[in-house]
Image (cartoon, rainbow, N blue to C red; front, side, top):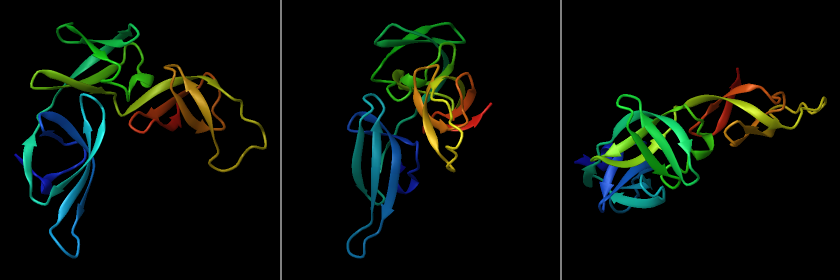
Length: 185
């Protein structure tokens, strides 16, 4: 059991038979009445985000998540196939289960696949990845506004904002959690 006072981002809890991850939370102590905790919870199976308020000190069941590093092999349209690198066992995840990372998946990449009570609940990429820019507009001399960005299509099909000096063929490092440009490599 876990109390609302122990909430932190990324913590997984069991609520109404479903497994949720805490995306955001805020302790609120109004001038009148009891304290409470406002949360944004993400359902790990469906990916839906739910706003929920708990009384301060309320207890609930903590969901224990096991993560296994697996290698992304291929997509057959609606399902994505991953292989356990230890025993070569293959599993498929639906597009809905991994909707947040689909556009950054690259064949051969390692992905952390999460299980709860033996049941598959989702996958996440490493925090940083290096990907090649395959399409972007050329930077024009004179367009040097500080911090100006332009869209770039990466080798996985994802479109992110990059600085004007990035050109096609460059390999860039991105933050997969926020889908943001970090640096050119």
